[in-house]
Length: 384
Image 1: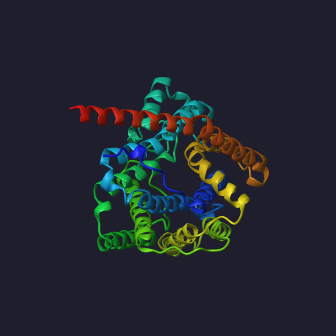
Image 2: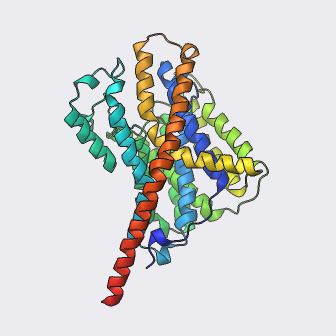
């Protein structure tokens, strides 16, 4: 059977790559404004966290495109190896970066950091490198995160769960059965956002029953709706697709909170509509289009290339910025904007550096090693 690492790469959807970068940047911007908010109701870039749900939908669509027609010549082992090579190098680096930055984050926001011994930090870092969630009892920050050195890694944990479910079961589903799964998952998402008590999809990052429920709810509909979208739609070309899709995505993620604390269900309906209908529309329009000119094509490629390194590596800088805000009570983002801008620029530059100096070379090396091992296995099998 052909090694998954030896399978010919398919052409990318360039606009979807670009949109992934737009969503990653919106996540960083939201996280920079978040320390200045008093809660969910007054956050700037209020729905930026929905970028995670957009990522899940994109992943489901792209997984279907990349692998649905390859299972006749690809084993489960090769699929998982291919996915690990693509995703896990940055998981490891994200955990290491979080450990390097950890003691610089000591502040009123994280008052116990200076009491954490180095040995415990190293243990949490090594566990983080595996993406295994840590229980609340092992938390070293105080936020009860399953990955306290690199908060966004929680969504990669659920991404891995989705890949396992796809490879073991869902890839074999008929369109009818997949549609039933998506409808049930969509109903569960609406039920949570409208009746879950917060009116939003914030959460999923802790290893406790409530947070795990949020994470599974956020994963199941968008990922498998993306897979269904790939299987059932015929794409159509849209002129200036990247521009229009980017504007729509930014508008959805930056939209102010809907309703007040007494009408949480109103915001829940908004978020349900975004995830169930608007995000699939954006992916559909983006997949069918092509960049309008060389500049747009280069921009889409650049955004797509840095999207994952930016998303998985930026949060240690956010922890430091959060510490700065809590160390200066009353500081407004109108005063802090130079520091916010500098943090964003540093995160962007570091992400590009991680991409070129670490992620791409490591993935190439791992691919060569995997192909070499697969070749030896084939030779041994033929000799026997």
